[in-house]
Image (cartoon, rainbow, N blue to C red; front, side):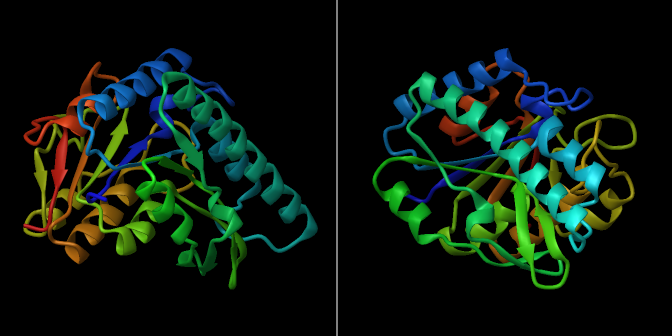
Length: 265
């Protein structure tokens, strides 16, 4: 098995985050077709896909404050509502990928994840590794999780990918959203973020459009720069999946100029 690539389809990309439970069906179908074409073009491509919750899980989670903790019976009813919303979107994403010919298998993070004050401490990975070895495409998503301190919480797709990456050692993580990359104060794409310029760039980072209980762009970049520091050979790219062909290009070409590259040096 070759070193895998992790691809995240952002919630802002596949849903309309300003409207409750609204899927961009045309965008989702095109992305699924691009993934299928990439697998056809590169027979050696080993791929894991994650997706955000967009206007599904984020809206429900914001209503109930699930990220901050789950303690009362009312909180736990909200926990169940968030779980159901995230799973509904996952079903739509899975079916779009299957229809395009991508052999995905969903792994529900909440089925095995345990957190400690918002940080993932355990999440079962052997089943994911097995499906990768058999030529299938594991599919994960942002989800609820049991937390030893908070009772329950939310774990973002980036947090799940970071945890899995510590064991599976991907060679690249591709984060496809609706923006062209990480933007500076003037609205221009920052081509590279690394340890030498991250402190300056932190001052320009903002949140995300629509409801996002997991921190938006600032949190995403912080998570990814930490991961890049821990795995120096890893390359992480944030780019727009709204650009036709961008996902396929990033999956199949070794030299890509799209978006923002996050690297250790």
